[in-house]
Length: 286
Image 1 (cartoon, rainbow, N blue to C red):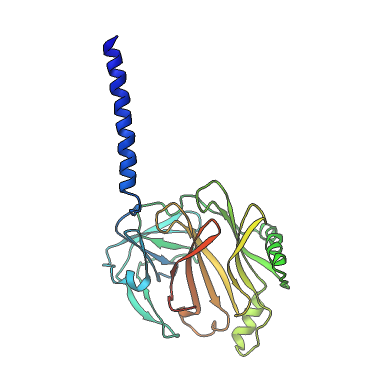
Image 2: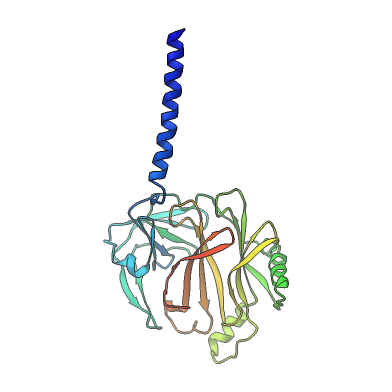
């Protein structure tokens, strides 16, 4: 009987010590990066966006200096892994704006909605549901209009260009991300032929919704410049379990002139109603 009591006492003591060790270890590691090392990220055109080093976000110029051409990248569409390749060292490019960027060689072609990352974690911990059917896309339009109405804004000819749902924070709550605009192919064609056209009345936005229309805000909104948005991917870029939103803004006015600087690319982290810009391809833009 005494031996049994001794065993129970030892077991309880062991469990208590294990709990105390885990708590102590968690406190010691608090604030430490989940993944160490160099983790660059590239877009579908093989341009370097920046990346993560020991838990810190670095812009493209900072990351370019660290790449040795031995990094292995996995490539993803919006919903799944689609390939793997070794990347080259970063090669500097100068664009028509005078800004510079960095290009990597991979020896493969990627779809427009794709990205590559050198990382050991799964950048798609929760797979987005991407809507492509026109009827499905149209069903999201009332949500966008409800937000515009709330701000006393009226946009003629508005339609939904892209829509997806995903649990960004892993809290069991789905977010809805909608790209809407009133810019159509005929407008792009007209402006690309005659850039002196006074382009007024155009609108494009990226909106995030939770709980229907009750909790909604703009991730990006452009009613002044002639440009439109897209969301090529939503991904956990830094390995913390929260999925970031990658937004591309394309200038219509500049379309006839070749150059990658026609685009502005940002990676945003959404936590609650807070929006943090983690990376911007051209860091000096406002």
